[in-house]
Amino acid sequence: MTIIDAHAHLGSGFPPWRTNDVAADLVATSAEVGISRTLVSTLGVDGLLSHPTPSELRAANDITAAAVARFPAALAGVVYLSPEHPAASLDELNRHVADGPFVGVKLWIAMRANDVRLDRLVGRIEELGVPVLQHAWYKTVDGFPDESTPSDVAELARRHPGLTIQMAHLGGAGRRGVADIAPHKNIVVDTSGGDPVLGEVEYAVSELGADRVIFGTDAPIRDPATALAKVLHLPPDSRDLVLSGNARRLYGRLPCST
Amino acid sequence: MFDVTCFVGAGPLASSTPAALGELLRRSGVTSAAVSPMAGLFVSDPTVNDVLRDLPPFFVPVPIVDPRWPPRVLASYRKHPAVRVVPGSHGYPASEARALDMPVILQMRVADPRNLPSDLPLPEVEVAEAVALSPMVVTGARAHELSPILTATQALADLSLAEQPDVVRRAVATFGADRLLIGTHAPFLTPEAARQKLLAARLPQASFAALTSENAARLNFILR
Image (cartoon, rainbow over all chains, first blue to last red; front, side, top):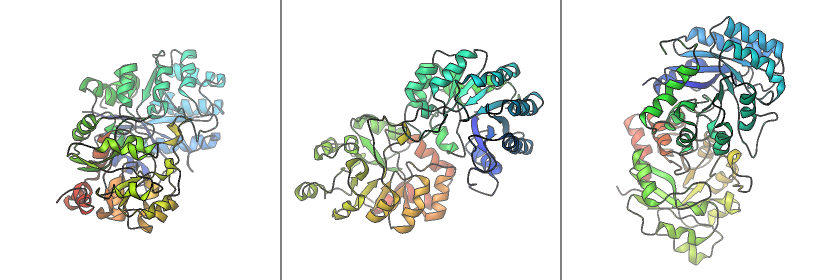
């Protein structure tokens, strides 16, 4: 069974766990649990940067590019952009997607997903036909300023019906978040986010359909083996879609061998 | 695989009957489980432990108690291999449980506070409080909390809510297999997570046996 992890990270914001090399650790750990391809983004060179400057964006994406070049069979790049810096983000998008091998875009918490200032950048992403991995969570405590909720993501999807959105963190969206995105067929939700709560993936599959739930670990913030446990008891047809079929369909730039 | 952390009965976040919980756990390789009353995680009331009566032998009943209960009530729980305390949601300093004259399992937390309903606060136990209590077993610690607790006490810890890549392998290498237990935290979490974490560690047989059964037997949860 092929397994594609559609949500993982590189960079120095995480303590390495086997060597001093996060990329090598991630590739090795993922392979041991059967993950054959991991989509990675880097959210900062010195920690996770919620409001990166243009130069910090470039440096973060350089880390991803170097890792993808080093592990081309195991990793695929997702470019980190910030709508606070539209010109620099468009440059990065062109450098890594239009003219490079990256397969998607990561938007984190620089700006809420429903902010109209995203529109110019998102329009270009739509032209390129790559998905956006958009952070989202419903938190009752410890939220970040400008952190998107599933409702914000739904609004982005409504304004951009041609955009494919991978909403991060089913575990943070909960049933309310699933209900928010259900009407918007251009949103899929990934299985990452928090502890491996019993039944949450089964619920999302029942409400959205297995073709709208995609496997993601959020490693190395979370553990790939634990993430995999969330989906192993799905019926085989649904499990195959969640673990690889949906990623292959949505991320058209992934190599055919994935 | 012995599970040191699971809960039976009805609750505001998750519920399970003994039959359903047993089936859920067996499906992920659990052969026996220390089970506590779900309702006891939320309220301090001796009657919550009534749900532990007449359980099938798959389960080892572990009542949830409050050290402020009358001595006569607390004495009735001495027949069990351990009791569980949840000072966070019951609202007392963990160190008060030192007065209990029986083996104590300290439950540090129940759920991710970010995802809890705002009208259901479940305060967590701080590391310093866990160290002050120095219980027989600590359950529900996060990965970064294991080191200060296991270094400062003789406690064993479960890995039910400890998650990071290689968490089991790193914990065994750091603290020793004799200090660790497997907990599923079912039915809040999928028990398959405990199994997959354990399998991913690819432990030597002796360490695997320690985590899955030998340590639990040493604590009298399993008959040798």
